[in-house]
Amino acid sequence: MGIVLGGVGGWDDDDESIPPVPPRVTYIESNSEIHNIKGRPKTMSARSVIGIVGIALLALGLITTALGVLGSMQVEAEYKRAIGSHLSNSYDAPTFEVMEVNLRKAWDGMNATLAPEDCGRAFDWERTPDMCMAYQFQYIAGLASRIESYIARVQQGNISQFSDVYEQMIQNMRHEFNRNGPADWVAHPAWLLKYHPDYYWFLWGHIGLGFWFLLCPGIIALVVAVSWY
Image 1 (cartoon, rainbow, N blue to C red):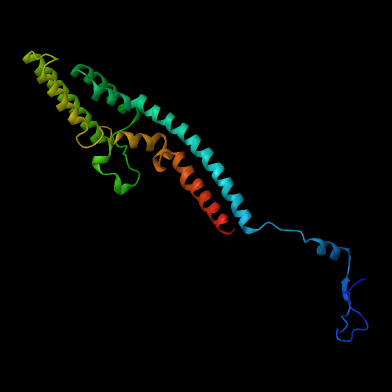
Image 2: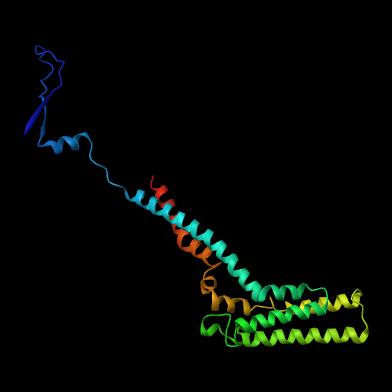
């Protein structure tokens, strides 16, 4: 054990008005005590840990979101090649004949990828007849029958494609496509649920996964860490 003596000097021994100050004594037990006196080793604070976690979650969230954007583009392209684009082309067709051809392609795509028992909802209480493919097939068949009727009427009446009557007939047919929403209101979610369920359950697939489960917690963690400063 060592003893370090230190005191406060500067008074006159002859000056009786100033009482003597005893010397300051510091006891040093060991070398570890010397180390502790110079500076105790610091430990990582809770706010630092939360900040690091927040940054990590943000980084993972951004990566997941970026991958989700690319993935959603690919998934949407797959669906459009199978069904979606054919319905869009049928809706935008300038003539009933082109409309019929593309609607047939959409019909074939639905039959190739989906079955009547497939539904656009996952839970049993949501799988009502209007949300299952059995009715979707009936609806598309009804559109095809209506197009055929228009074609027959045009041929019988010798109606020119450039006449106002023909244009009005086309507009009426287009109205039927989206009368109660998109013409593939069942096929689109049913296709996602069957082939890419992650893009059905999460908003925009992995974009939603990255946002809700990584980015949001990361932002919250950073806000909490910053508020402690």
